[in-house]
Image (cartoon, rainbow, N blue to C red):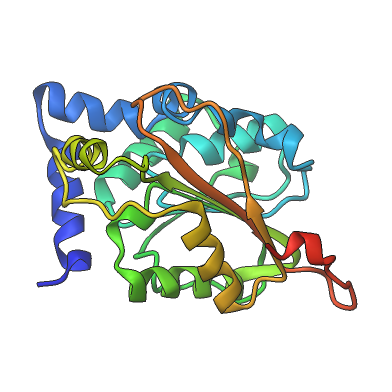
Length: 242
């Protein structure tokens, strides 16, 4: 049984658990986690110049906190698409829409799918985000994720990916892996340089360290990249290729 088969069960068990385990899942992958565990993301509308016309896809959306946040901050006229492999996470996302009285015109589209096989139309999105998914994928599947992101991105669009990364200290990395695998399978920690190599290999026109800072919790390093598909006819400066 490969990791893609195991992961849905692990996350469903995490979300559905009672006590501290379930509490952590529902809050770390929700609005609380967006502000505490993924703090730099709250500034994305300003830093990426997002507008009401930005078509957003969030891969590994959890309970949809990032999608809701970006829609509200930009006054989005286009419903975001939220993809997660957990049916429970998407069910919570649906419940949150009702509680928070999200405008029906921009009610997120919820899709249960894996990051390596997305049932969505080619060249559809101006912004694709993907957080805390890469650590669960081997090199072959991570390459599929990057390929899917490239396929789904419209010309001129941006792909932002962030993940827990290595510290440079083997003992500390072993400890961080232990912490991250408390409720799910052992992670694969990759550097920003490795992620950039994957972006180049699938054809992204430019890619750079996204330099997302600061991540407050947990105190584990992150790797992140910002990659893009330039508009047709646009020549990418060499400085943006590495």
